[in-house]
Length: 134
Image (cartoon, rainbow, N blue to C red):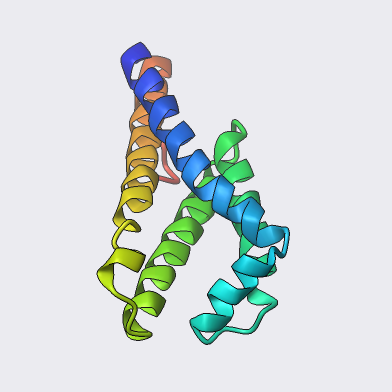
């Protein structure tokens, strides 16, 4: 379980770094962030909204407990990344613009699967089953 926990925190830390830096940039309302989303056809205010939502999602993932909230946070981050990739693709941006998006997606998926592996291991040690999340 110790190796899994170490690997979980490495992957989750990388995910938080990737997503967190962009989220802070968006939430601050930086002119470059606003220009980025308006170029894709979205209203300027969506950058700050998405930035705050990503920060809240990362907090939910990093804070111990609240398993159902974590599920929603992981889903929200994936929806954000899929939406970003789709928006770039549909706006005609070259792959060099959106081609990096699978990397943070891999970190989110990796963190999610390792979180569940740790959760199953912990419940097995306690002799319990997780009714809510299989």
